[in-house]
Amino acid sequence: MNLATWLVRAACEFQSKDALYLGVDPVARYDQFGHWATSGASWLRSRGIQAGDRVAIYMPNNPDYLALFYAIWHLGAVAVPVNAKLHAKEAAWVFENAGARLAFVGKNAAQELEQSLGPNSQTEILVLPKVGFGGIAHGFDPSPVASRDADDLAWLFYTSGTTGRPKGVEITHGMMQSMALSYFVDVDHVFDSDVALYAAPMSHGAGLYNLMHVMKGAGHVCPVSGGFDPEEIFALGAHFGAVHMFAAPTMIKRLTQQAVQREEPPTGLRTIVYGGGPMYLADIEEAVDVFGDIFVQIYGQGECPMAISALSRKDVADRTHSRWKERLASVGKAQSVVEVEIADPNGRPLPIGEVGEIMVRGAPVMKAYWKNPEATQKSIVNGWLMTGDMGVIDHDGYITLKDRSKDLIISGGSNIYPREVEEVLLLHKSISEVSVIGTPHPEWGEEVVAFIVLAGGETLNKPDLDAHCNAYIARFKRPKRYVVCEDLPKNNYGKILKTELRMQI
Image (cartoon, rainbow, N blue to C red; front, side, top):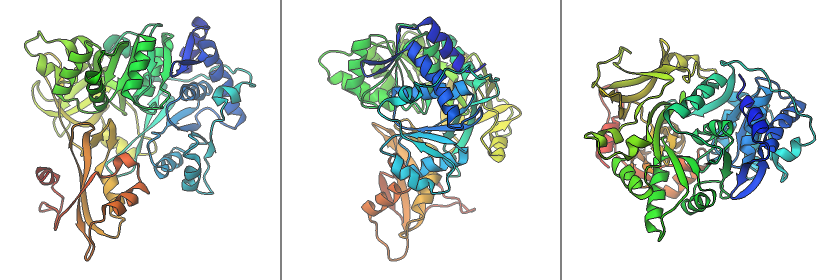
């Protein structure tokens, strides 16, 4: 079944109900939202887009984002959402790798993106006019929803890899349907009186969570700021009264800090689902003390989007169980649509209580990476997704993450892979060797630190290195600190010992 079918049904059932908002202002009712998708699919077809073609979205959160999702799916095409914080060169690489025929981009990024793509690019760049996507699709007749099977591609999600280049995760209609339906069982209820608030990037988990809210006829609110601002979120919560949002742990920490400083506690936040990075025990304890039992934790990966495990609202808020702290420090239990095992280095399941690599299989697990059979073979073993995360399962089924087997850095909920940053730094003439690690940061979770060995006769020039990084990668990936070393610690095989570097911070 095509995901767009859910909007077709919602547009019939909730016709006159406001669906899309920019701040507190309604932008479209459900019947209009549905029409934007059906007529938008016809408009896309008029531009030469066909079923299976990839259409990229590289712009900040706004109501058009959702309309584009459903128009793309309605036609049977594939959405390629790209984090708006990425550098234009990074976005251009994604467009080329995905073979995107068309890309909707923010007006501030268009010129730099066109320069990054070059004259021979096959991707057409389009900035939406002031009338928005609904305005340009208005004159086109509605089209029937395209038939799609469970294994047909719906969303091509690019997640950074240890090689320094992103990998495209093939997310299908069936994977997303499984994730959405399990949400009602394992995560939370949704009512037509709710609104989903998109304060985290719609190119990631926040965007995935639109599905269950469309099904139930809930509202969809994009902050006027286009991003995350605690006071703006509190104001929207007070206005709408039943707000759901997805947030990274660092966002929850900032919300809690801001709430503590207010004379009146915030109201109207019904559910905050958190994930995408490590949540420190002290932070979630304080958040529950301030906001009450509004939190649910999920654990997932792009390769199994939002659907590996969940820690219920009750478990997050409970302080009566003898092991409540251990449970609060976990990522909950396996969601209903997956199996989760802990494996040894050979992929063999380990007994309960032993630490190993977390592996998962089930309907929401990807079948392959886009045009990357080698990476697929390493990640999918005998039908199991090898997550690269180390963890343990207790006798009650609670999964606790112990460490990441890869050197992933998570800063502000965004993934940063050290190899990517290292390769950029090594392009600079002053650097002979480099190793990048993540270190704890009280607000962002982790920050990027680069240990560098300078080339002969060179000196550290931080502004110059910052400018160099800004020319190649997104600002949030840029090192916050540079530590000059005479040599980098290595083992007998020449591998840099990052564990020793972490001990120096």
